[in-house]
Length: 283
Image (cartoon, rainbow, N blue to C red; front, side, top):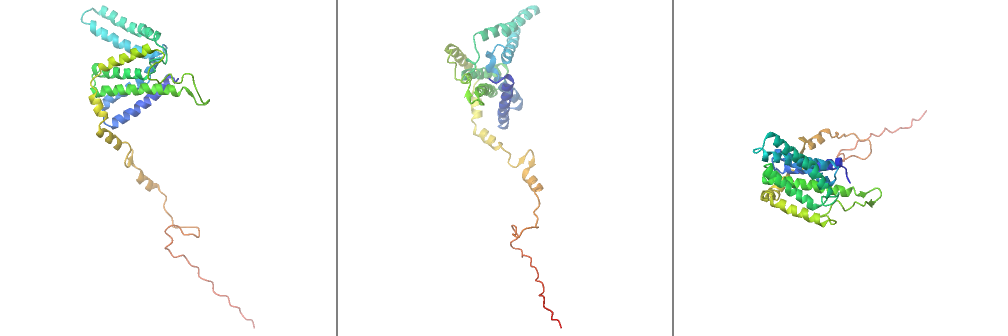
């Protein structure tokens, strides 16, 4: 199994690469792209929420605790005094962070249903619903954020499977095949519950038409293909011009008897014969 740092690093790399393509294709505004990219990074650590003492699990339930405690505060604010609001807010915060966390980990085990594609789909739909209905993002942006979460989620599962292969010994570890799966075959009840939750989450998602039309647009893919590689300049530098500038000058000086290219039309230098030596008759 890959550690937390590796999952964060690879998740950031994959989300950054996807964000670059999204920005080049001019799909969403840059200010929305930051939130979408962060969603992908979060998705890359979500499968480890079933580990009781893992940082992703603690961070996830801490975030849920803050979210639900403030929701409770807004509900009771018009009815109760400040002291009662403090009690309601703090009680909700502690209950979600510790009690709900303990209950969740007691009914789940590592590499169970949360290491499955169905769970990734569930978080895709939940993210789309949260981004649109709670955070106020456009339908297309909300679905794109969910897609980033799903890509990060699958990246985590694939990375765990890669770490299940012992390359040096050329063997498969016992954990191979437990990270990336469609559902948890050992506990079909939990798989059915997560599948049902995914259906309910899908019913709460915003309309997906803007997202589908956006990513299937011929104009989008043509523009992305056009910007995939620079046509002449790299970072504003004309490489052909620089190559010609630093190319070595061609010299006409040769040291061999075979003429170089372009010298065949030139007349070969001739050497004047020495005058004949005549015998001198002595008297």
